[in-house]
Amino acid sequence: MHNQPDYCVVGMDASFYRCKQILIIDDCAPVRTSIKAMAQQIGFESIHLARDANEAIAKCHEIPFDFILSDFNLGEGKDGYQLFETLKTRQLLAPLNCFIMVSAENQRQIVHGMIELQPDDYLLKPFTYQQLEERISRAVKGRIALRKIYVSLFAQDYQNAITECDNAVVQKPEFAAAALRIKGELLLKLRNYAEAEAFYQQVLQQYKTSAWARLGHAVACFYQQRWDDTELQLADLTQFDETKVEALDWLSRLYVKYRRFEIAHDTLYEAVLLSPKNIIRQKTLANLASIIGDKPASARINSKIVAAARHSVNDTAENYLNQARSLVDAAYCGNVLERAVTINNAAKIVDHLAKRFDGSKLTAEITILRSRFLAAKGELADAKQLISEIPLSYQHTITIDSCMDAAKAYFELGDLYASQVYIDKLQHILERDDFLTETQRIMLEMEQLRHEELKNKLKVINTEAAQAYQREDFNTAFDRFAETFDYMPTNPTIAINLMQTLVKGARVTPISQRYVRAAVKLLARSELDDDLMLRFKRYLAQIKALHPDVIPRRRPKEREVL
Image (tube, rainbow, N blue to C red):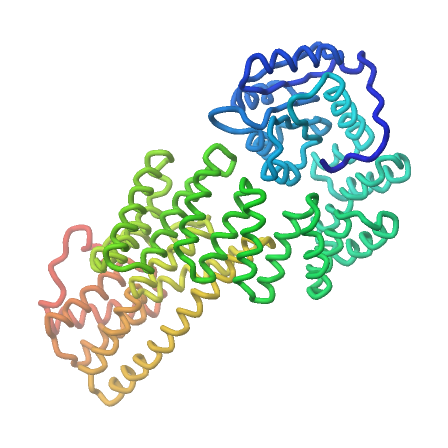
């Protein structure tokens, strides 16, 4: 794996390991016993065993282990990849901990996954005591030599980590390549792109064939929008195992910058095949599938995400929500029968979701999804009634995916105003600078385009309404305002226009009564500015005086408002 310089490994003295804590994780008892015997031979005395990931995590909460040896396949539950991912995410690995992955398989998917997570080493079964000692010795020497860097990284003191990298290059020349690699990654993390480019150019003068330095240089160029320089470098770096997956990631992101979404999707799909356990990459691929119009493929990918994340730190309710949401999107691609089957499948996912997670915290998301189910089946009245239970901007900390789904739900119901509320919110929460967020921005652009097309249509209708009102053709004006209200049933201004037009002389019919009642109901529960509230009260009083039958008798709860 990375951070492994080419030098002759000399075994550490057995006394060094005597006071060190080591954890051995394997679901096979005889294998645990065998590796324990090897550890004792190396010099370890404080040896801990775990049969699965959950037991290992519990022990890591109690003991800051110096060494962890984990098998990749751990039976039911988390595998070694997900265990290491969890320990890193929860910061349960001490700064100088050496984590070595063990596996009986050498599949490319496992290897590429390990390259991404970057454990200290990867050891294939069967192995001898000498091989294990060599790997442990090599790993610990690297950790000790660069200990000040790792301590700073653990504390997230990145500037000091860069300083310690510079010191290590001078003081520990045999570990210079590892220190330089960390420094380059930190310069990119801190967005010092011009400095990073110059740094990588300097490194490449010394390490001309270094794939990691070439990749870092390409990324620095990418962020400075020198994309022509970047494309050739990235394409070449896809030939090397060490950089293949990451180069495919960046190449796909580059194609997105060129708006070449089809090839971006195909490129990222190749990366997913090589390292399928990276959930963020799979989510990005699902978004790209949606962007190119392949909604069924997006639904299939979201289904795979649910399965792949089942035991990982990424096992969230949002995965299930996204699976159901993508099925709704895909349902519109089929005929009536296919749509019904797809919606029923989505409904089953939501039912399962409410049982697995705390449903009380997902009420709004599930309600919005169920309204989309009804809308897809053509039951618009029921869908509108259901979604009316959710106040606009129902959460201050709404997720990007939930916000996007709410925008879609209201648009599908013809409520452009409410949909725009969520689109405006999306503009403010799409802040991260990563590939997933970039695809989400493109999806937002596509939603905005649908909005603009509908807005242009509504602009024509509103103009006709205003012109009819000016010439005192109040019946035509009311009909046009009503048509606009169908598209924007949560817009207070249109609701006021309906009431005003009725007061001015529009005819009272069962249809106009229904619209005015809906307008009054909306305004009574909305937060209005002083001017709008004043107009609302004035028109409400006039309607009651002129047309007492239009406003139904109030229930006790409504009296205070009306």
